[in-house]
Length: 273
Image (cartoon, rainbow, N blue to C red; front, top):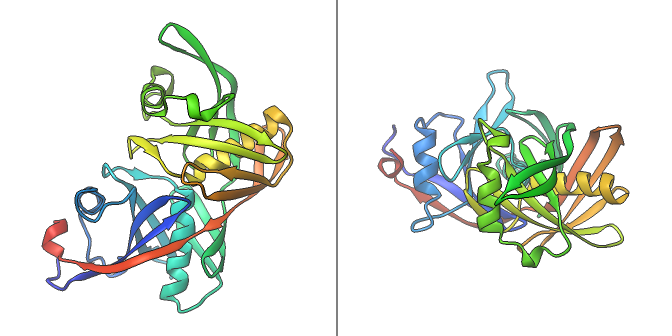
């Protein structure tokens, strides 16, 4: 690895924060280790690491690593921050395209507001009942790039997101890889509120983009809320999910919200392995 310092941006979207690095020259090779070290809250700290890489066909690729070093197929808030990062690197490009594990994505960048087109989603199982502490908990399992188990509740403030979220995330029903868990409350009109326990972060996060989309899609079917759905995250920041529905599948899904640059810095290569 080069001895030169590696520049990075610290970015955030709806409360999710990320370390973002241009890795097109391959300066970071031990990506899992880099994620664990850079996302350590005792040091720089973040929910995840975003790496800009080449696809080999003159395209751009997003690789997303959770705080624990595991690689995820997609991250909604991370994808929006990543799109703005590309815009910055490309000096003002308003429309960007990139590849993620779950497929191609396009985005529209308007300063600190980014609209990201998500992959088509499908409802895996509705009205699923999972036994937790000798009780059956009902929810819906949906994939919005990554799996989410969505539970509709009367009041998200009364939910033990850390405890119940961890139990559901590791439940045998979701083996072998587990699931993200979302607790969703209807606020009235087209507005909902969500709290998310994120797989890979292994804690509640202040916002989750794929979780906001999952919550909006499940709420749309369960409560008859039409698109677009406004989603209040735990950070207090609103996201908006627009979509088309066809049976148990959804397409033309757009996630819109903030993508903030918090600060920039440099890291010594030996620090991240």
